[in-house]
Image (tube, each protein chain N blue to C red):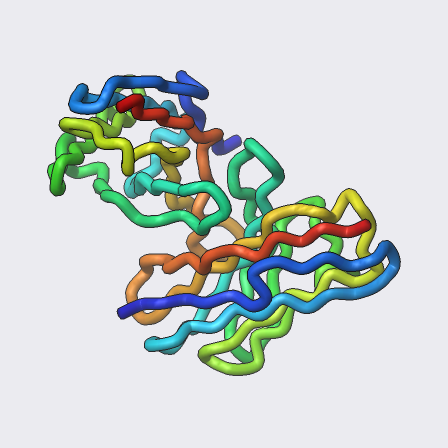
Length: 114
Length: 114
């Protein structure tokens, strides 16, 4: 079956440090992945995505790395700020029931200490 | 652009009553809308996919007679929780998808059934 999971449920870092959030997926045919940030009581917010024909993609302070060999995805946040405190989800696009759907991982709660 | 709203943002209802949640795409036409449910400290779980003008497709284990979905226009989908029970208390999140495959998420609706 399909599943997208995370290695660490919680991560606590000091302000200014770099954060790395990991995610494992099981479907080797998956070709599109997205990272979302969810603040308490809010909907998910798109951070960055990556297709399987890439192994790295950079945004503003964020980098996503994809290792297809071990089916692993990571989100790196540079110079983490208190405003980065949230739950981070990886999501995988899958085809199911004739349409594209998102399958979300368990989530990692990031806490940034000032 | 690509703003999705939900109404209400929170609702409290008595056990046995029904409650309707609206999801609107404010600045684009959403051919497909998705409804997710999120229990505390858990991930988003897809409940159903709805396409404008057709019946919703429900995920396995989701009761279609309990969670009524109507996608009557390209900017509005509604989720009605019928005969709500305390175990239906959850955070309900919708997303909308237009011409491109990206899903834009609403802010969520907190349902509490007493």
